Amino acid sequence: MDHKFDNDLRSDEMDFDAHGSLTFTKGDILSRHGTSWKIESVEQEPSSDEIMRIPTYWVYLSRVVVN
Image (cartoon, rainbow, N blue to C red; front, side, top):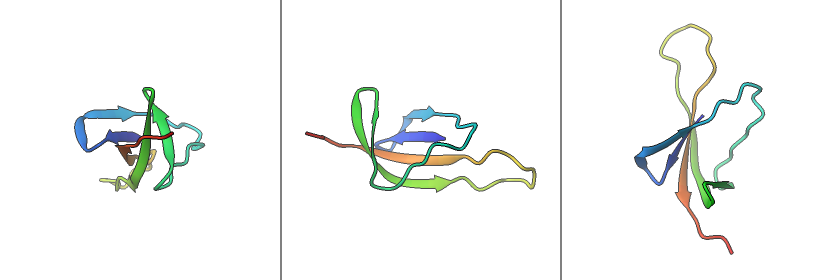
């Protein structure tokens, strides 16, 4: 799972979810690096071949202020 912070290509962060237990939904708020982030969208990367592989998801985040 790749995270993109505020459309900054240099700020990608990757997580590996071997058990498929992580779920992310548009509008959810999560905390990363002591900052709150809103999920703007979640996209699954299409497979470029026909070999079974672990799916890759792109999670697009924007910074939010939470009281």
